[in-house]
Length: 329
Image: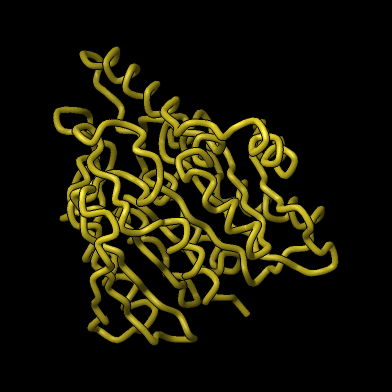
């Protein structure tokens, strides 16, 4: 998902794995559900930075056109697409948008990758230093010209490469993004060295202790025996970084989530640092035994490849309930 590219000897195998990553998706809904979904969804294109950029937008039916609404930007992993991200989440954020009245945007990275600030050369978005921060903020402006947005409630969530991109947005678009929710990732060493945001940024982080691609304890990103594509802090160091920045209490409130699926091979520990400056928070959902996955989402590859998907929490609900508590004023 993050895009751990191969060296020449393994290129064919990696191409096959990438194809599986892109194509893997849960079963599609029946005809009636699909028609209802399509009626509320649209594909869009924009020119930005001399490039043709695309996105998918979910707007619930019946929104009050005169009331500003929140926007959740959901960023796919390396090798993925916005439409694939919608499938990975099983449409869970769309259903929450129906219930609570917000918009969901699923943009597409250039050649299926985001320039997340790792400073690597493996993918075009990185090699050409594509301005993805600019693209995403321009997309917010574009959406806001057609649907009234609550500009204090624009949020970014993402998995893997998309999670790294959400960390970058917290750094470089801090006046536009109210809170972030990275999943299956820790913060890269390069992003950690960037200039700190001028305001506290609420962060909810969901990470698996047995992720085979992004090491829980920090270090090089990549599957064993394959080319490495950057380095991350440990999950603990990532959390500590934001706890210090947001001026949170040094010790969290710790709770274990209910074991809703005793057969999924995971348990979830919640560590909440609060209250922090200006009402911000830092919350970690540590998925014990979890892999490079979206809890409650599709098991897009076998567990022996990407690790287990926890069913004890639903990442969509966790993320939206966190975002609801935080607005930028």
